Amino acid sequence: MKPQIVLSIILVYSLASTSSASVILNPVEDAHRLTDRNPPVTTNVSTINVVNSAWHVQTYLKFDLSQISDLNEVTSMTLRLYETTNGQSGSNFGADLEIIDLYFTTNHSWDETDREAPSVPTHNGQLLDSFNNTSAPGSWHSWDLSSYDLENDVVDSKLTLILLSNDFRYGWNMTTYISKENEQAEFWPQLILEGNISLVPEPSAFIGMACSTLLLIGFRGGRK
Image (cartoon, rainbow, N blue to C red; front, side, top):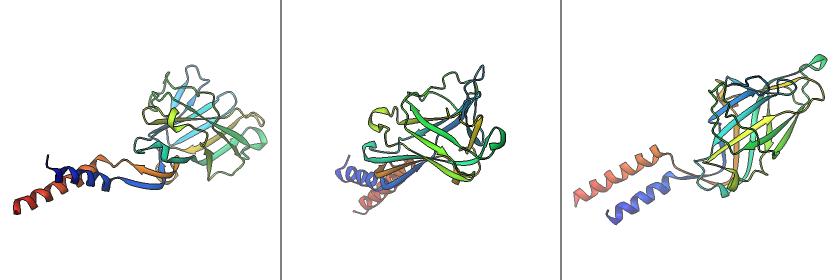
C-alpha cells in the first residue's frame, strides 16, 4: 500500500474520532424483575419499577461502553432515572420516602426479553450509592458511581447496574421510572460519563470518510 494512502487512512480515522467532556449513554437493555415470584418474572415495558416488601422488584440496566476508547479517561459517572409515579401503602400513598440502593454485577448474560430469565444475576454485594427518594413524581433521580472501578469491573465493555430497596420503614412502596421502551426518549435512563473522553468512531462514519479519501487520491493520481 502506498505511503500516502496509509497516511490518509490514519488521518481519516483521527478525523472520525471525537472527544468530549461529557457523554450520555442510554441502556442497551433494561427491565424489572419480580424476584420473589415462583418462578420469578422479568418484564420490559415502557416503565421499570423498584418495589420493596414482599414483591421485592429489582431493576436491571445494561450499558454498552464500547464506544469509549479509553475508560481511564472517565473521571466520574452518574446514573439518572426519570421518576413517573411513586406510592406507599396506607395513608402515605403518593408521599414517597423510599431509599433506593444501587449495586452492580459483572454478569451480563441476562436478556430483557426473557420473562423467565433464570440467568438474571444477583449483585456483587458492593453498594455504589443510595438515593433517598423524597421527591414528587416528575423529577430525575441520580446515583453517583465514583466508587465503581471501571478498569477492573467492566467485562466485555458492558456495565450492568441493579436497583433495589430494602427500606421497609413505611410498609409497601413502589417507585416507577421511564425505560428505554418509552416513547419519550428524552426521559430514557442515562449514564453520564465525564472527563476528557475519546470516542471510537462509528464504522459507517469511518468507512464513508475513508472511501471519499481514497477516491480523491485516485482522482488526483489519474490526473498526473
